Length: 134
Ligand SMILES: [Zn+2]
Image (cartoon, rainbow, N blue to C red; front, side, top):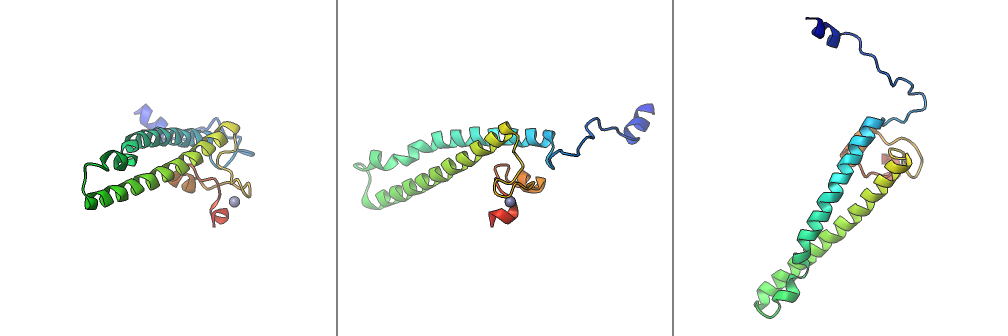
């Protein structure tokens, strides 16, 4: 049972020089950056799929009745609104990945304080701490 004793015993952290380290450590930054890239790809795919819904009305205008045309218009409005939301989210994700690249990820863009890891895990694209988000 030497292995068990080892894994239950003291563990040494080679990266213990956290004096000036940010609250969010490298591994977490990399993990969240990966999540951001995945979300980025997801949104790109969603927008591509959604593109059809955005021009449905123009295509169907001649062939459908008035009521279903109103439905189609509403559907199109929703598709357009969703697309605007996705575009806005993409901008935030790109900005967050930029902060990963320049080393400022995890710092509030307004007050420069650390953004708690919990908040970043909920929204890796969060640019501000909770106080500044108000
Ligand atoms: Zn702040």
